[in-house]
Amino acid sequence: MVFSHVTPPRDVRVVTAGGRPVARSVRVVATFAGRLVGVLGGWPGGGDGILLAPCRAVHTFFLSGPLDVAFLAADGTVLRLLEGMPPWRVAGCRGARATLELPPSSLRRAGVRPGDRLFFLGCGGQGRG
Image 1 (cartoon, rainbow, N blue to C red):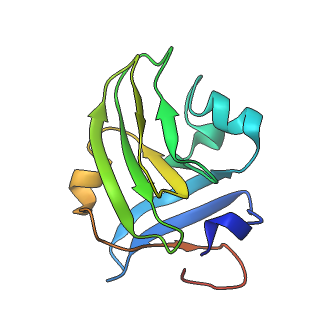
Image 2 (spheres, rainbow, N blue to C red):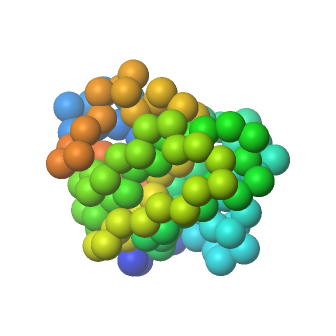
């Protein structure tokens, strides 16, 4: 998936290169307003997280608890992980094209590490990436 050219569907499933599930239902958010609001008020559509694209920085202003954040390159490679990012913080990553926000401990449970490549099933066109 090349995030700079994404025409998102409503929801996607996220897996590692080995097929290990990371999140079963992630809402793709590609508008400025949607990226600004992020997960305020809960996970959109009751899903497991959100994929912000394009996005290289996030904030946790007004959130009531922490979240996991993975900054991704255009090909889905994890550039930086923040596990349990607390409320009222700002973080970014040079070179990131998208950001995956998940509930706390999601990245650890899935075994995701910097350098891993994530695939977004249901993104149309490329199928796995």
